[in-house]
Length: 234
Length: 200
Image (tube, rainbow over all chains, first blue to last red; front, side, top):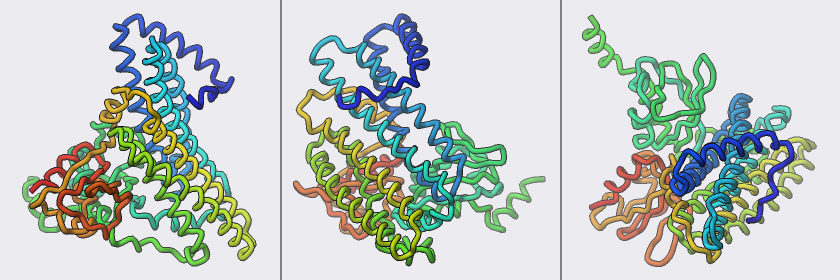
């Protein structure tokens, strides 16, 4: 495992806390099941973060959004913790040379995911540079096959009031919603039950064609449909 | 992959054309490498892992070219800060590429595979699917751009296995053949849609 020295002294407090929590937890659960499930869950979360965090970092630069930058920082910290937890859990699970060998692979993937999140952190570091030094970046980054876009959800549109899963944005447009901005602030944790509201701003990544399709879904209904609706509304 | 990528071409682009092109290429390369790395891991596929290692050399070269190009811009525009920002961004992209290589390395090393790896990848929000294009499929004989696969299914094709060869990072002009094995990433529900499109 190439990266075993990554924990700095600064994390000592968290380390001790985690360690106690781990010990308590492993008593509660049947050992084998706990270990395999846990490494599996930790790795899944790390993989998911490694993917969303890069999207967030680029969109922070494109939109010059400090808040997205802060979310990247938080995810980076979360990733550090996860990387530490997965090592502990793997060490506890390892009983033989064979175990150890196959767990090293997992730990290497975990630390690669952490490296990606560090790189995302480096990207949002650029937000601290004067904006005059980077006005060209949005133009450059936006020329890619998949672009980042901001879409406002019309309260009358079919997206308003539905979850992202229900409205099938992903399969119908290919666009991925990576963050949502509403009057109360930013929302990054877009779990399955997250409901889009009218006037939400969706930060999405997708192809130009997908973007155009999504724009149609996010727009209000056509006058004809609206007419029908107002008839229904007594 | 999409044919219409001309929307946000700005006035700034002219000033940084070579640098911009290189930066974009490095960004695309690093992202494709990560996508490929996770799929190499999921399928325990050494061919894909090997490709990631050779893409890393390309990424290295791109970064070097980019640094030189950014320094040239600096000389022309007397704006060191701009070039500094570009060089740092390129460095972050290169780190992402490195991380992809270290994932590929797990596949290439001759160690016993831990089943937990593919289980965790399957639990992920972003799914990876391999789907073969059937004889009578609407996809066969058409380009990725024509079928607008990404926006119709949500799935983004990262590699195509044709006979024994691979096409990595196909674009909108890549024609799909019957018998092609598509390796794509996207939302879980997208896999079902892609399978339907690829079936006869």
